[in-house]
Image (tube, rainbow, N blue to C red; front, side, top):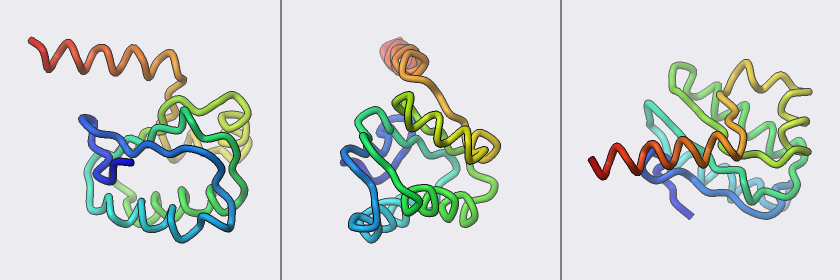
Amino acid sequence: MSNNGSSQNPIVLFGEYDIERKEELALIFREAEPFDELLIDLNRVEYVDSTFLTELANLRKRNPDAAITLLGPRPHLKKVLQLMSFEKMFRIVDGSEAVSASSDEVSKNAG
């Protein structure tokens, strides 16, 4: 799991995020700070509860001017993020868009 969250090396989260993983998640986010741009890959996140949403909201509060992108949330997670209006605080990119963004980045780096 990466902790710098840059466009070159996003934070990759996986599994379930609930109260039992609160401290782990908080540490991951704090270790990424400070940043101007943060990419968080949610493609392998299976379940979240309010703990996860609170940590994301706290990350935004601590970094109000940073660009934070949530990559590839599964449909059920994307629905939760939309219900909570997180698209107003974060850029949310679907899995297919994330793959194409990664391909663009690879081609830029290769050229």
